[in-house]
Length: 143
Image (cartoon, rainbow, N blue to C red; front, top):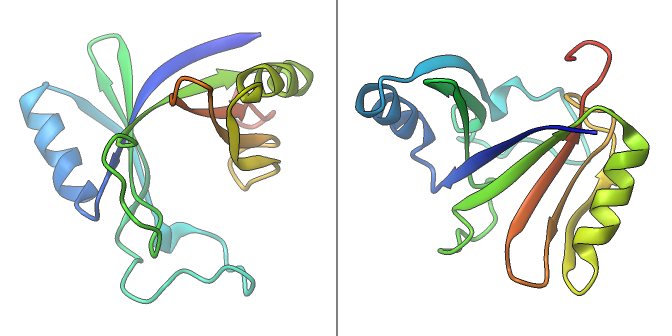
């Protein structure tokens, strides 16, 4: 079942500034900010030098709404038009797979569904209308 849907902003290396800006401009409460430096060590995909303080994921509460934010992944080009995506939060892996498959019909997979340190099943897909989606399955420790 889909349990949440949030706008997800992608910034170009100025995520920390954006968090502070939206905190002040929208009277937002900063729930959490993780940086690329917080990622577990992975020799196959090391965090590039100088990217440690870039925002991996920020969660802000704006009234009763959630706003998510991250910096563009270090080393990848920043593309205008992809700075706003939609994050879907699901509580069942089979439903995540089903929704992902439906969204990729006529679109393209940007990141295949896979286990991450924050989700047992996470992936990114751009649908046939050019809308980018991030699907994340809740794990037992983040339900």
